[in-house]
Length: 122
Image (tube, rainbow, N blue to C red):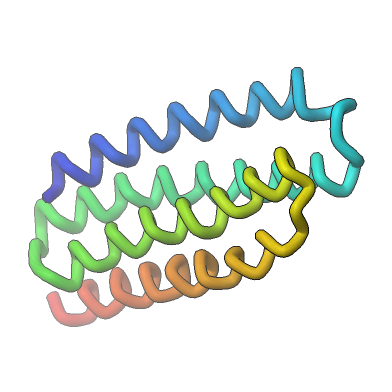
């Protein structure tokens, strides 16, 4: 799983950079300042958790197991739900998509707690 999480982290980081550049050059000026900020928050958390996947990949080399894997997949799910809902809200203007965002936040929190739990179990 270490290679899987490193690969997913690499691809996710590349996407976060591309979306950040897109926001800087295309989104800003075409949506309200409020929605541009929403997009930037999504991109920031996207990058944070792309990098977190490298941490999971490293932990998986030392202490592999179900809890380590759960942490990685929770970070992936969190990115899709949290950042994805914010991106979708920016592009569509549909504020109801913000109701999905907290589920991604919970996945991020659970991922960090799973990673901490794995490190405590070492």
